[in-house]
Length: 170
Image (tube, rainbow, N blue to C red; front, side, top):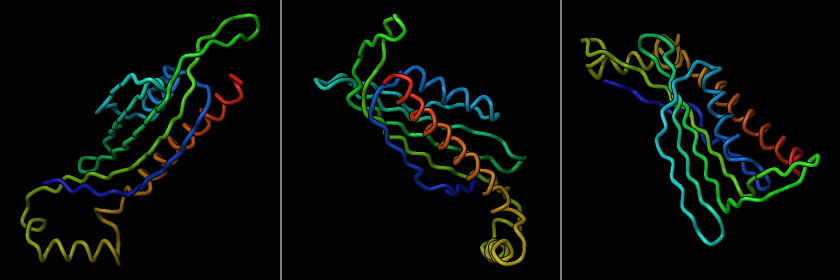
């Protein structure tokens, strides 16, 4: 049996301006590798419209915290009105993209509860929840702070990436 609890809610950022889509993907991948996560791409769709490309990206990053707990960080990115542009910088022509980006990050804690007698019965489950809430966090809230801090770290890195892109290409 698996318990899945959301511990990080809706970290959102938006950006409109020049950037390179491949650099955005590379930034996400490098953060996932640096922090020891396993990447699981859930969705990557591109639609070409008259206003430009519309790209939707959903990536889950998984990490095993211990035998029973796993952290999951879900990144949803919607890139809208993405158009290619050419700029001249230091005498070189550079192909960049211009568009609107919306990023949403959620964090989940997944706990594997084994089917033992003490964890399947509702009375024992209730007692365990009361002990976790008021006495000591044996099971459920033990790693919540880890998931929240990792999600905030990814959020800050993506925001810093887009702030850098603004100054790099304008």
